[in-house]
Image (cartoon, rainbow, N blue to C red; front, side, top):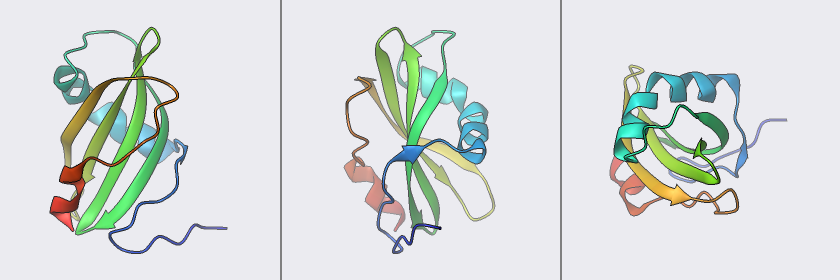
Length: 106
């Protein structure tokens, strides 16, 4: 059963899908640069999404020993990906809380 998400509202946190992993791998370099982390570790773990004029993905990525990054990735309607915000360092237990900038694409 598919989760119903109102436009502008955020989904619940869930394990990453193949689609989200592929998106993260496409913008990996930008996530690591914005977190100032040059680790070889890069494992997307969980995500939330928001339907806007396109789609926002908020993804928890394991990037270093005991450290995660939370990346807000915007996907436009034509498929272009932009890393809007990276929050680092985060822990495994930190909830995926949307940053205030996520409202800019509503």
